[in-house]
Image 1 (cartoon, rainbow, N blue to C red):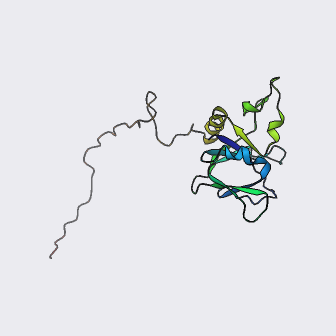
Image 2: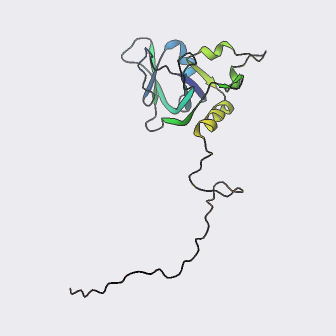
Image 3: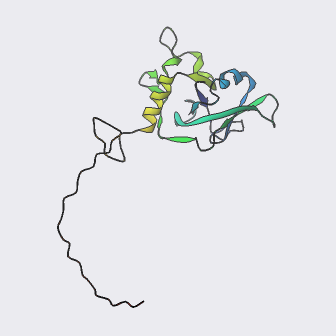
Length: 172
């Protein structure tokens, strides 16, 4: 098992629904098979005007032949696993791609960047995930030494609050 990038255009000719299935031709089957049971990241190509870059993740439950289209396959997405990233991650991180695995020996962008389905290293996947989930605005304050422990401060005791009391006589 391993991670993959699924390239997804908004004007795709394929029967794609990123939360349910990703359709692809048989030439990508061997690559897609490596991510069965694991997580993928969706990428909108840079050629798309105002591209969102890497915009979501999902877990591939299984890969099957498409019963409606000959020579096509479906990556079935595990129900409930699709997640839009809090903020989209651009393809480039400065001059270089955020996927370091796309660089060739000379440090230039290789032809692998054009593949609709391609494997991605765990380091690259986690880098995209870290930037996309944007954990700078934490919901709960945390202790610096242990990020899993919630930092709670005791509220000061304000004494007895003045309340209006109403006497009632109740009979049962």
